[in-house]
Length: 232
Ligand code: 5GP
Image 1: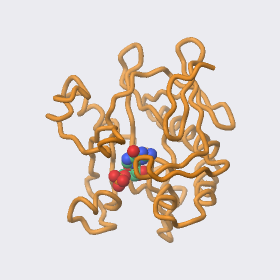
Image 2 (image 1 turned 60 degrees about the vertical axis):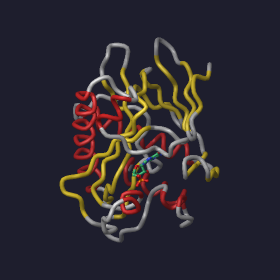
Image 3 (image 1 turned 30 degrees about the vertical axis):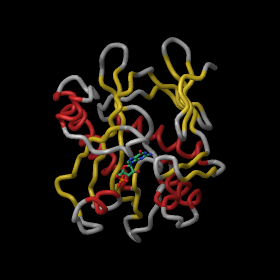
Image 4 (image 1 turned 90 degrees about the vertical axis):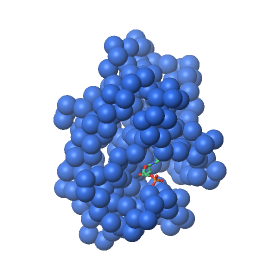
């Protein structure tokens, strides 16, 4: 397969009939790539979890790039023009939010907080407002940001409800969007313990990439537990 793009945790290849094949690798990175490790099995665990989430979104009327899961570690996806914007939705204040603003760690955010960030390791994904997003040409119109916000909040409701049943609190997550050839705005990339914060609803235990970021240990064991609950 012809490689189109190699990111920090996935590689994108050209597929058949305008599709792409996204291969989930075992690498873990944090701090915009400054910290790296390889955890055997991580790629396939994330591929399986993300496939369940993408199918759940589709079932709830949210359009995504997902076409099919090819076990153990690949998704066939629609080819997208990915927007250089990350959309973050937060239900609980933690992570960079409490480092940057006077929020108390663990505060519930009602309504949820949505942030748009520039996707750039070099600039450390800075938050952008509408004017900066337009001036940088990240999007062409303010309506595109509003549409991403609307879809992201719907994704939050669908995922939060699903995960609550599995004893998992959806703390926050990051989404990426892109346009397909017909001009539809679709959810792209992945939704996994690499891109979300998951806390055990009873114990508050961290079940996501923060275990790696903060050297908490047992990274793969917790990813596996998320998979067990989500993929059942
Ligand atoms: P924070 O801004 O607190 O570091 O992250 C908020 C949420 O978005 C977390 O769930 C985190 O995993 C996700 N997130 C933010 N930026 C990135 C990123 O560049 N890559 C990945 N994989 N996740 C991100």
